[in-house]
Image (cartoon, rainbow, N blue to C red; front, side):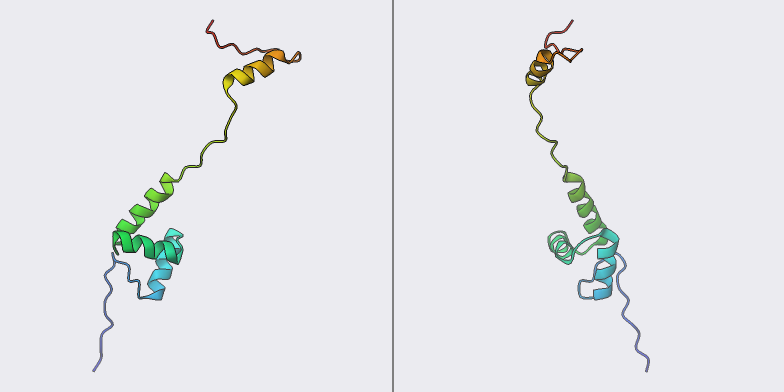
Length: 92
């Protein structure tokens, strides 16, 4: 008798199938640890994993570098004899 190959559910991640895990990791650019952590927290739905992963990536925004206050910049440019433009805190 011929035994049929079990059909996988197309919208679920089978964490026991190495080729399926590899395809999902490659498509989402995830590590194994990230995929298992998200799948354990959210579930095995590919759509839910993709949504959670994009939300995590979108939430990671680098902080801008610390800049000196405007008053310090104005003081430096005002005391510089080569500066032609001075910054004032008062509106014209």
